[in-house]
Length: 125
Image (tube, rainbow, N blue to C red):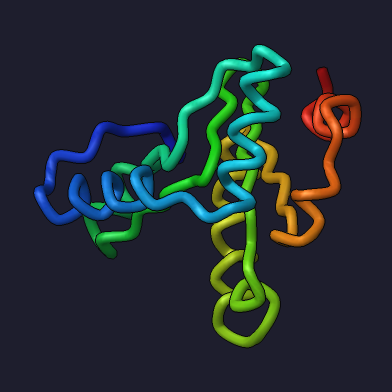
C-alpha cells in the first residue's frame, strides 16, 4: 500500500527539493488556488510502497497531496499524454487508487482555467 514518506536517500531528497523550488507555472497557479480555498496540502510529496520500493526501487512524487481529502492533483504537460508517459501514469494511478487515493490529472493549459469553485468541486469539498 502506498503511503506518504519522508525520503531518506540524498538523491531523492535533492530531487524532491529541486521540484519544490522550481514549480511550473501551472503548479504555481494551483498553489495559489489551494491557498485561497484554505485547503491544506503538500507540494511534491513522496509516496512509496514498502514492498514495491524494496524490490523495484519504485516511488512516486505527487505534485499536490491533499491528505484530508485523500486526493492527489497532478499538473501534466504533453509528455504525460503520449507513449511511455501515458503507460507509466496508468500504473501509478492504479497504485494510488488501490491505496484509496484519488488522482486528479489536469493538463497544464486546463489548470489555468480553474476557478476556486471548480477546484473545490473536483476535490469533492
